[in-house]
Image 1 (cartoon, helix red, strand yellow):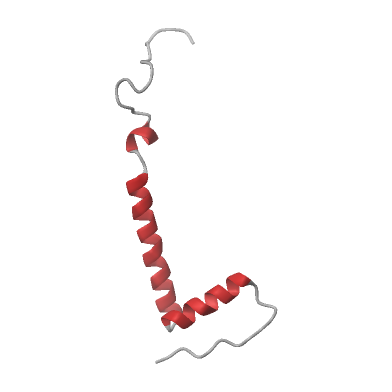
Image 2 (cartoon, one colour; image 1 turned 90 degrees about the vertical axis):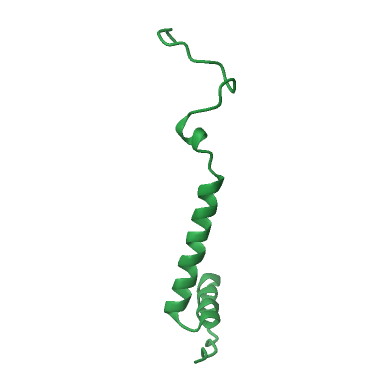
Length: 74
């Protein structure tokens, strides 16, 4: 099965053309959605690896900043 060429319509915006090309590339809406979800999961996994858990939780290595003294008024 091959995708039919897209109809040319001047009132479509750039996003709509990207969607048309994506469906043409993958052959069906379902296959295009599957490809997008796969790419999304790859991006999420990459972002997950890039985030420092210590930074997110506020836990830094000793000496990275001045120690907090408990009981002192700020």
